[in-house]
Length: 239
Image 1 (cartoon, helix red, strand yellow):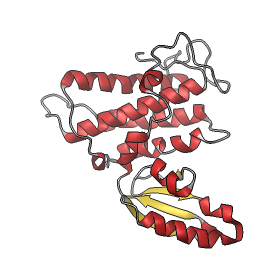
Image 2 (image 1 turned 90 degrees about the horizontal axis):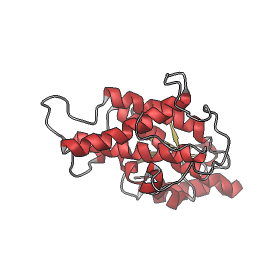
Image 3 (image 1 turned 180 degrees about the vertical axis):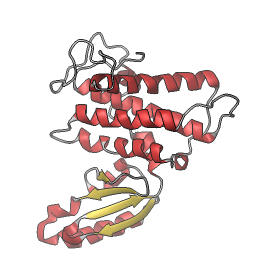
Image 4 (image 1 turned 30 degrees about the vertical axis):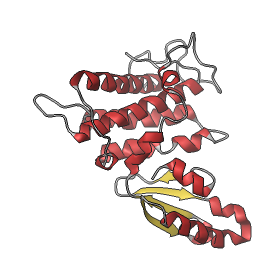
């Protein structure tokens, strides 16, 4: 179950809540648009949601709030980068920086300099470069196979998924806050890169988990590229 599929029922993307370490929780206020009928509408939506595959639980809270728990949060990887095409996400074919929708809070000129962890531009750019490198190295190592989203169950993988789940809502928000969002997604990915490796080490055999994490890296790359484009920065493939 993905945010996009949930939005088809709710009318707008739900908002992820919590850490997702134990449960992948979304919250929706869709029923509140119906005023006095909010509670009734929430019950109707809950029935529709419970009938969908991939829904683990739907809770109706006082006032008409809906809490939705999905069974396999990794399924969102397939649509996480839907906001941009593959070429645009990697910056190919663009003669210069994309037109920003708002001012960049990162250093002008070369946002990833200085290359220190207290420079948010570097944090974001380096995460994008790492995600690109994972895809490149995976191809060289022959990491390929069917994507099994249920394998993205490690706490570090789930933290990245939790951050990616915000992207659909930010695309339709009046104040998406792309820069701050990119920084949080980047930090989650740095943790996963170091603690939940996507590539086999030493004599380790390629596994389905590696394949799943390479796909996760691809989603991170696309969403970070989208966020950087929104503030007028071309994402770096190498740093």
